[in-house]
Image 1 (cartoon, rainbow, N blue to C red):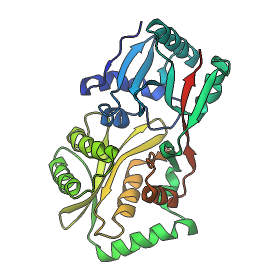
Image 2 (cartoon, rainbow, N blue to C red):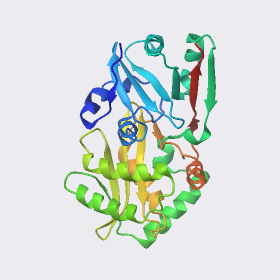
Image 3 (spheres, rainbow, N blue to C red):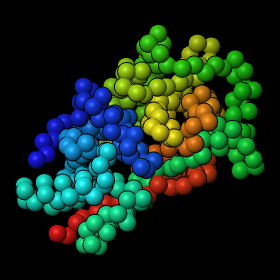
Length: 297
């Protein structure tokens, strides 16, 4: 019934057709996330009954499915997965299920499900107006960092990535990544896949921007837009330029959002306490919790 195949660069155009049908703002069903983490999670996909199905290998070695996305009702996709897993005699497990889908899944399976929540995987969702304007007392700290940066580097410039400057961006990241402390397996994978994805900017629905001072790139950001949300997949800056992270965040937000882009998803913190503190300091509109679900057939 379902014939899964690996996610490749060539398959992204086919997958992209179904992503606007997702009725949530989590980052897992985006081109950037799917392509960057396809090898790490052994990601595969198939399209059946006008629905995109994806499965991954999760931390304990089990195979799990991401929420089906497409033109048909969710219940049809769930029933297809029941039949598929029954046919090959495997457990039906879901991962990265957004909170919005919990009730539908519980009702479909008549509450015969086990839920597990992992705070480390919660996405940080912000109002685009907040991050692009940084108004009010609660953003005084970020504005202070940015004002110091602008005072120290008054000739800084923001530019969009394109085919003419992407080699300079790649050169910056090569130097940046060579100085990274790659302790976590996920950090090593992110480093590898960022290097892979930068040459594809503009080709697979991803776009980016960078900050430069006197012709030297010191910060970059890469994202994509689906429906009303900007997803920020990559954000790197040289810390020896104080305020560089605040500047690239704000400049990229201002350049990328418009009246139809209401939210910015800055993804999860993977349990990194420093990253968590930083993301919380920008006052998220909401944490998008995601769940691991095992179906008891």
